[in-house]
Image (cartoon, rainbow over all chains, first blue to last red; front, side):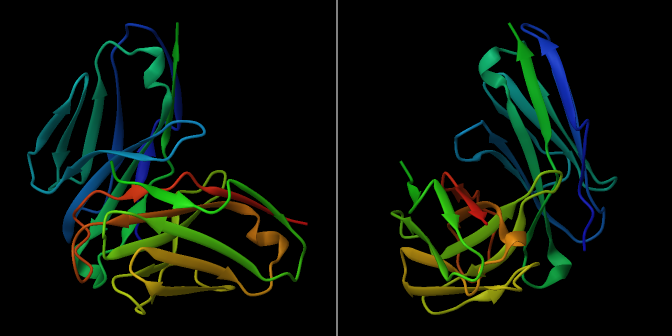
Length: 114
Length: 116
């Protein structure tokens, strides 16, 4: 069973603050890393799919970086807004597993205080 | 917009009942998945399918079976529901063929199942 760790488990930030959180994964047999946002009472929604070491992706105020050699990805949110409140999930795909399953972390729950 | 729909948002069943959870996607995706989400745990894969009538076990298939008779529909079956199957069940689909899962997954809204 692969170990995908997300930290912190939860955090509260003030509106306007920037924040970041981490996804750690095995550094061998990397295939891809996904980031999802899951708002309460909604479906998880994909933010980024990252496949190359050094990848940086951006969508509005949210960006992500990837370091496959050391096994981590950062998600950054600039100028947090209340609508950013959600659980952020990362999912790792291992090329050595044969079936290329996604292994999800437990998520980081972000609450943005107006 | 890709749409993944699930038959029920909330479901309450009794222990021992046979339970069907239905999932339909409208984007002609070949790959479909069933996950469950429990407090303190990440999404865990129950079963997946990469083609009609094809199915593969995920990490926690015990107590479940699946059916994929049509490309757009993937059903999760609890043969004899038990209280430890009380959970949030999420269906997802993705582009790609033959297990190429680099593409983002599109999720349904989830079914919260309670087994009493």
